[in-house]
Image (cartoon, rainbow, N blue to C red; front, side):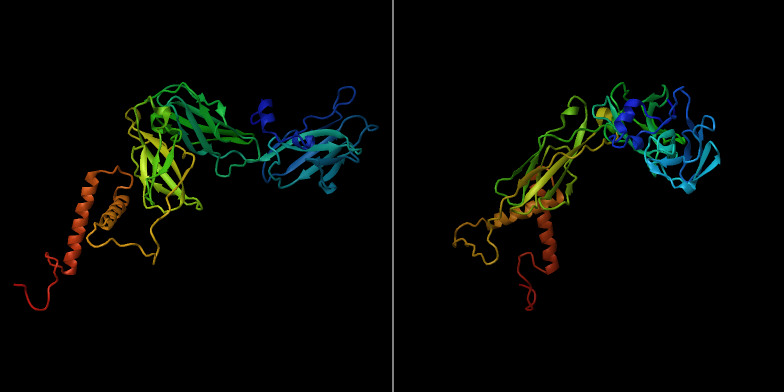
Length: 421
């Protein structure tokens, strides 16, 4: 099979629907007369040219002068008749064509250049390939979901479009020994991707690269070196649940399950959470979730619907010192915070009667503590140790403020009467 030509199955998969057969299927060869001989021939046959090139072509009619001649012949390109001023008769049986500054082919299977008889019948046809050689593929990235397979994708050069069918081959081999291998399962996660399903070694680096070829040349990417254990990822965490935290109007509880794909492997995981309000597209990311499978979001707006997502990054697999690759985000899960029951300005809140215990200082202290927790330990587990740290921080802050304001340890301000006796 010629370089750059698709096989029958691949051509069938890549072609658009056959609305205009003449435009979509490049004409090869030429009709034959009753004796089996060609009635005409185009030269050059199936040329491949760079964009911007010129083409000099001829259509030569076979037979004696009493039969078909070049007079009255005309050319079409992709079904459209070319202006007669582009053609000229070289002799009684040959019609020449001159095309300058050619654009890229309209179809990767080749443009149709056809020589017609005066009655419109086709005498001969040629495929015209006009394009660019492939550029060096780049931005190769690979990942494994079970430490037995590998999926890679890449970017096909700076300009990408070559106007010609370009074949991409992913090659790989063990770094220090072994032969070159070619990936066979293409287009698994996009047009420029390939999946290696099995027979991969652990604890040994691989060299991976991409080769691009078409009718005008070839190019090879830089080599990517990786260890399978360093590019492990997972599916998003399943069973993400978001719920209210009792009657707390500014908090939501998020819980999820560790990805099951790596349950049989020795690894650690870290998680990220992101959330947004219902009518916004801006996500806020929580980075410090560590390896917990739950987190409490604080500082939220009361009476608001939030969408929450979680993703996972496995690391330390079998002692690997590199972090893994973040999974995709989980499907959004929605929940709403309770509406605020506190009265607005001028709401006339009831004050406790004299002598009755008031919960105001306790609620105020709890709110201050939760605000500090949000700032200093966003998703850490609540504990008395954290509460003690907060109390120490509050006492230090009050002491510093009191010193700045000139307040005596007894809490009484000094007066102009002189030192206290």
